[in-house]
Length: 135
Image 1 (spheres, rainbow, N blue to C red):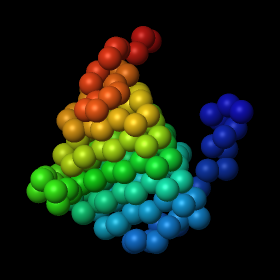
Image 2 (cartoon, rainbow, N blue to C red):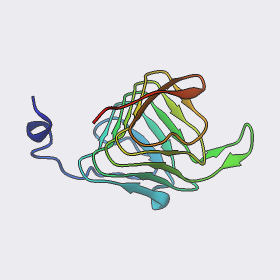
Image 3 (cartoon, rainbow, N blue to C red):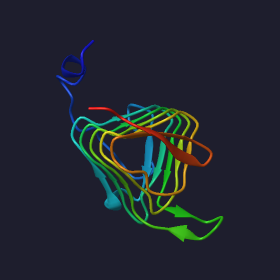
Image 4 (cartoon, helix red, strand yellow):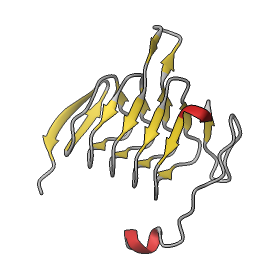
């Protein structure tokens, strides 16, 4: 199925603070959450938007991902910004004060602690840029 077909009937999901969506993902602090057009958030993902989370258009967030704008373990806080068409692999964690650039791919099971530029592939614990995306 093509991207065009897959998102032909896409509609903004109903998102309530602390309540699972019909797609089985959850957001806390929805007043600080921005959801772009044709986003795809996988089941069992968790988003804590206390200090702001922006998912731009066409972002894909795999299942079982965690996005934190605040970490009580190390007292870090700050907006998380996933830019247009970036893709985050399943079971990845994005920590506070991180921006991931347009078209970037984050591999599965990655821990993103710092900004990742546009048009690259990054993965690991912590996530590091492995190569640029051609094109």
